Length: 336
Image (tube, rainbow, N blue to C red; front, side, top):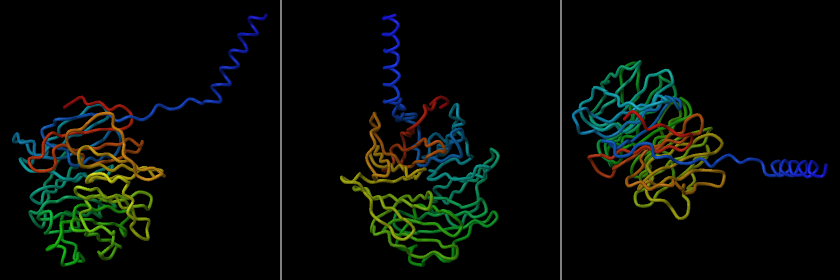
């Protein structure tokens, strides 16, 4: 009897301890999925955890820019039909099409597995593509990192320059990226502090308080974030009324990619493998658990909150040593 009572007391004590200290989920960790790929990866985007695209530098093997796809089980290198050049951006829609933009005015449209190179207004580099819907699409870029800035709109199969782009942009800046919440709300950012807002009718100047390059902008739930800087990184956020600097202290090195997720989460990536994540407390450096030799250039957050980031040797061409990291459930690196 006494032994049974002791055993019951032990079980009860353990149960109460479990209730008092509920099981904690294991900490989400980072994983190095790919490294040393023949071309640096410059952009990553997808429709789900089983449909992820990453694009980047010319592989220098006669097959053109590096494009890889993840179907949830394995990675595949995808042939685009382009024989040379770097691709800087990928963006699309769940039911297609998917667009990839890059050097030489290249915009590739992928639909149902087939790639088409679209006619564009110039041979300048396409750095960013975004659209609220498949029939309301933008492309932005420049002739160099400091001039030739352009914004094109897609009507049917025809890309045409946006007529309300301020005339002085072409001579003073490139436009690096754009992103929006709707047909009548988007921000474009570029070199030399350029920031433009689209209100559905025209592009007008905006003031981010930043005089240097902002390389990427993203939106989620009405909030925008943009990142940039060279030796010293910059993070700014827009709440619908004004832009505010939210760069952590000490500041990061230059940042080139940013994505906002659900519940105030976000990720920013940049030079020398720098990764910063956002919470209600602000932006803070993330601990990867491993060291990256190159830079991180682009990011994306999937619907499950998984974080994807890509990069490589991106400081000067040729862009090589492609890298892809992931935070969340373990992702297979098989197939490449």
